[in-house]
Length: 274
Image 1 (cartoon, rainbow, N blue to C red):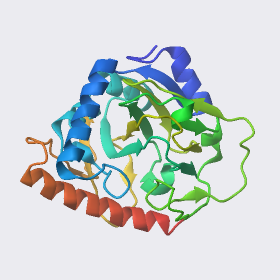
Image 2: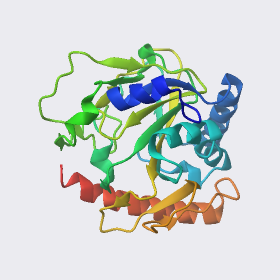
Image 3: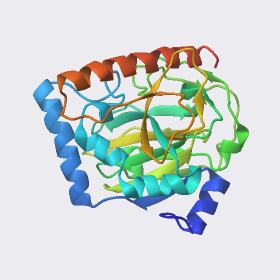
């Protein structure tokens, strides 16, 4: 039995590479967070989607709050231990009745970590049923290790470089991970997964938090930033990310721009490998 996860849930994760759903906060709290996200989007006349979806925890106190939520971190600690960094974070919106989708991929392709111990916590701000394009996974595929990917620049692909697994793998027995607003799923960095288009009449929005143990170093030539969200870091592989003091403040935007530029440089470096 862990701090948040039952032993059955931990065993399920270790065997299949994922676990869901996990309760984090109430539907009402999820709606409050979604309202803050959409209020900002309306004020700036932009969408926190592809091209502007990286590291919003550096810009908004409410996102930083979710990143450090005890229910999230307790579950992550059950899987990777007590010393945890938030390596990366992306916003994943899908418009109502929109063909946008995410192809089959592994998160490890983008990150270049050694050891590759990374957990993605996908936190739902709106309901994400199968019809809305929740994640579809290949159970146990984390044991395949890193698979080769190729870039796919089709307009409807939401991944930044459209990287898609381009070698054969068995997807005859997939499972879906539907989650309700206020719930999350957890999956391993090597788990092969995708998500289909949103065929509902509402916008589907989630936040993908990438957590690592502090001993996981980046193999990139670029020194990256990350946030220590629990425990201690005795390794010093990253520049620390400050918590936002003001939503979308001048200092916050400056640091965010630098952190995202570094991550994109590292992302380009990793893409060249696969």
